[in-house]
Image (cartoon, rainbow, N blue to C red):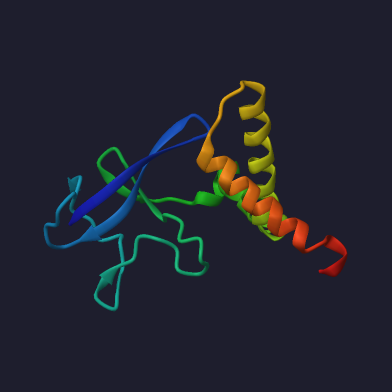
Amino acid sequence: MYIQTKTLTLENIEHEVVLKASDTSFLAYDVEIETDIIEKKDGKYIVREQETWDSLPIYEIVDGNVMNFNPYDYVYFTKMKRRKALSGKIRKQYNLSAEIKTMRKTLNKILKHIELKDESFDKYNKKVENIIEKIPKNNN
């Protein structure tokens, strides 16, 4: 069996997890190993968990043998639900127009402070400021 791997360092231990497996040679395979532990489903070898969208690795290579790998034995993966919840909250609160306004104001202050003229930025900034003046906040 031809196997493509990736090295993960979890809790200061390196793991060579299986990314892809095939019974025929393919470009970028890393090792060729005789094993019957990896199951085949619908014509493909299953090397990642299939129960969630996370698609975590389920096999690793230890001393030249394919072994089961339980990602939930490691803090990195057990805290994944918390990280996803936090990123979801951040995504909901992220406001692109407020971010652009902050960047535009900051750049304007920096340019004035270092006394540097950028005509294209000045033209853009004036255009934006004129639009903002025409549409007051209380009308939104």
